[in-house]
Length: 253
Image (cartoon, rainbow, N blue to C red; front, side, top):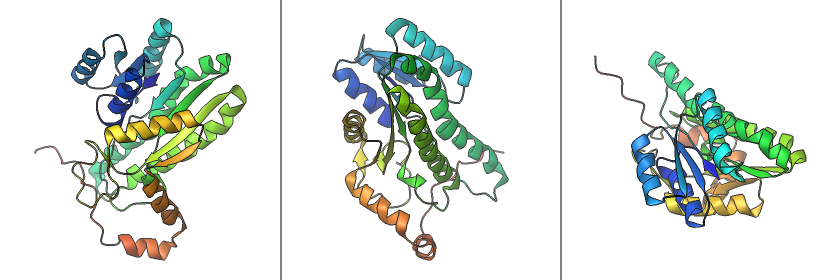
């Protein structure tokens, strides 16, 4: 298998879970030291791959090198993602918007792209995209993140329909709150918070079971359904005074 964003969090937990079950796992990330430490824990099972999903050429090159040595994976997780608070009126946040969309949306396509033709030729494979419950409704202070995850959900649905005829499954997973570096500084309650290992166990089961769309955990799936059907006036009122995701601190003058 192959997973992006494997230096920490859900990606690392997914890599460890599959390595523990005997898989050879290609793990990409932007932090070579963290990847090397992970590979040292699982010699011969985890293949560390330094790459940024925003770099299409690098992803193509690293994926080709992995397949040359290990063959086309049966399972690919596009997991790399970032979450940073944004405000449209802050001109400095324009670059943050771009970074979030490049990572959370284009990163999906640039992860899956190198593997699609080999999977099509083989007639099988599973592609799992990690979206978010945040993609179901707009969230104040997290406009770029919510937009990116809404786009991810739509992209994965399109890809699912395109890939069905080739025997390739495309799975959309929308986690709720997971205890990772992306959530540790959130200044608001996080109901049904899951440990990364627990989330990885559930996501791996979803990838195996044949579902096309799932929200993790099941309690958050109920919340997600309510979110989708609330009228705009009630959603707006409910979130009017909500705490917001912290923005990136500006560089020192």
